[in-house]
Length: 116
Image (cartoon, rainbow, N blue to C red):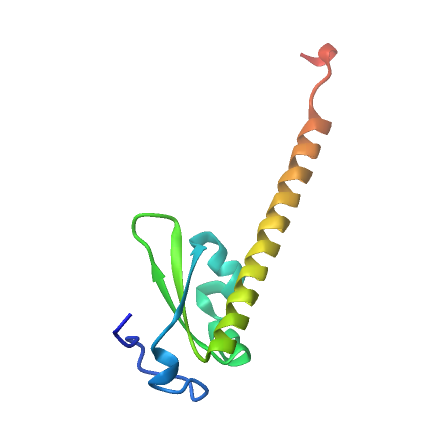
């Protein structure tokens, strides 16, 4: 990736141009973005500040995925990737548990043969 990010407000902890040269690119399900970054991305700046990285989100038109481009030093990018993957996995497991509870509730509500 030879081009620098379009974003104009580069955070002070990201050193231009060395931290902008080799970004980490992750693909995240678009439906998870609100869970990860809050409504309308309200927690993105907090995540950037804590992780000492800069994020760019690019919605992929042909799928339900969004590219999360992470800029920063090598170690900060690794930590941010780990945090995003861990949070996404936690939400996936939480959703799976919710579906299992829903299945159990549906089974409990099934009518016996005398009610059909």
